[in-house]
Image (cartoon, rainbow over all chains, first blue to last red; front, side, top):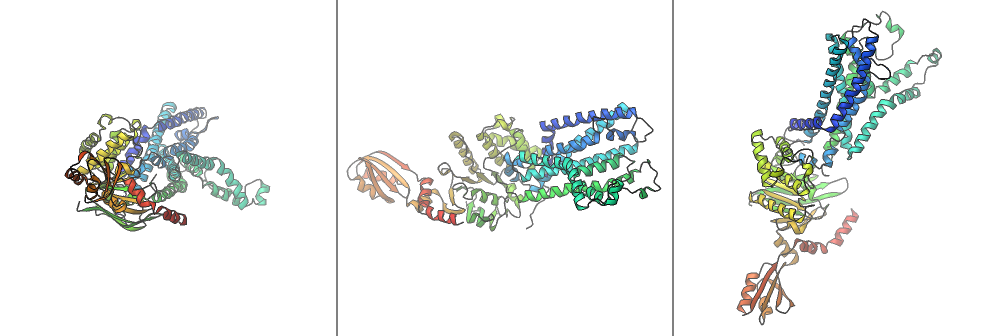
Length: 320
Length: 319
């Protein structure tokens, strides 16, 4: 049956209200301090490392993001860890919180569709994450200018901005996961636990499982085992499984964009490297092509998860 | 009251196996206070949600102000105010901010918004705490804030789901007064409750729900006549000879009891006080006290369902 009236009515109002809630919440402040402090620590490590090993690197600025100095991980890998935490923190009580505060049926009895409420919440979460990420990005660029004394080139700025967009898509995946669980589970604690559990599973355990499952599906070829090399069949399966995890997709896309020397994200045969000028950076467009499938994968995962949540929310009874 | 603002015909809501609302039909006129009464789980809230388009209708149809809530929910929800059972507001926002959010969802202009919010808050006597966070409010204040939202919305129909549950007697009384005030603004009020005694005083007509069906519908006096065969008990204290016979002859009186000497209790189908007074005086008796007990919904409800309970239990077990 067709319904009359725009599903977007009230979307702006919901988004602005949720955004204001996020930005003024204590939860957000805790998360931001967590991110800023760890990021500054990682940056400090990176700058020390860069100062010690300055060579004629044309992309010294991008190294800020990727270089690690033990015991601290690089800025990018810290973000890969903290973005899901932030996104889950913002989304885990999106819908069940309204249920539990008994505001849901009151809000839905105003002239808006459920579409506007759900999308408004998602967009507000995404906008909050975007604001935080842009702030972090400015912090990195500013610290880099001060401490390295080298201005970033145009291409470096472009690459780091693309990195920002990929990070946002990655945040979107986890925000959609959190909101989906907030629809499926009535208790916010359960939703938070489920989201965090899924995140830890995909970030820490899945890479190990992927290798094990790949070996079962495509047992290593004896010829390669004798040579001490991984066999291509197994490796392809393993990589395929690993890429089911958004963490892996984010890591690969970021490497392609922030390390211009990266030529391939999969395995490469020696024969394929014939004629390649090793160590030369790829042009921006080529790096982008390399990261494109991963970026699309992240965006598609966001949309898919949001749609599942949307359908579940539409079919849910509003009564408490 | 000539125009019907809500018309339901054969309204049905089925969950997988169970039937929550089973083919109910009713009509509510403009400016009426209509009570949906019955025990918890009798289908009152589900009926309300179907009228608002918040849950799908399995069968039958309902029209609210001429709109179909399934197809035009936004039009319905713009004109109908809903106060859910145990309504909640955003704790971290003030009363005014909460109403401002609703006003923005309703698409009110910023200019008229503030005036409407102030007027609504003063109407429910929350002006003093308008800028306090809702977290500090008592249950009664939250409930009143919910009513303020309906007032601000300038709703033509106010649907109140269990508005007095969890309120202390004084807060309940205040709240019922506010509901009467809504009626004087020509707002149609739909009131659901399982507390029969409290709401019977404000309702013009009631529908008694039982297991997803409307068992009885009409004004309290009508129902009393229908079910109890009369329901007014008039107490007469008077001295005189042969009063019992005289009183029994009054039109509308079905029986006369005599709990004490010079105390007569008349069971009647309407308020027969004037006639009883005339009868006593005409017999030369000395009238000392005359009072009437209105029929109570509780009595009607129990009276009606006494015969049916066993049958319903059987039906429920079968389902």
